[in-house]
Image (spheres, rainbow, N blue to C red):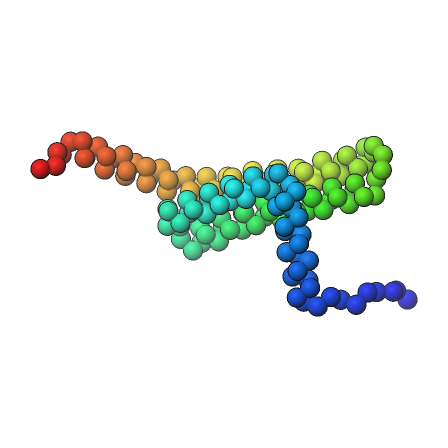
Amino acid sequence: MTNRRPKPKLSCSFGYAWEGLCYVVKRERNVRIHLAIALAVLFMGAWLELSTTEWAIIIMAIALVFAGEMINTAVELTIDLVVTDSSALAKGAKDVAAATVLITALAAAIMGLLILGPRLWQKMMAMRAQAHLCLIIPKA
């Protein structure tokens, strides 16, 4: 027979999730770096007028990086709570959790380059051509 706590109300569950999100944003430098990059990508995506499919891919990539960061933080906090002295196993667990973030961040960066890169290049070339035309054709 197990002794289970009653499940919290749904509103409380969302409150706990919000607290967790605030925790990682306040305390984890890399989360703030990922947040800044994500905001830049979102603004660039709006400027480049991404398709619905491209938006879905970009948003999924951003979400996976944040999920990886949060899992990494949860693993590190749990290990710090349980392990009081130096342990090769604890180090291994923390390193693997950190590698999860690295893999998701690299994959997100590649997805971003594949989606944003060609559109950004086209936009820059169009702006360059426009600037070149302005130099050639004087205004009356």
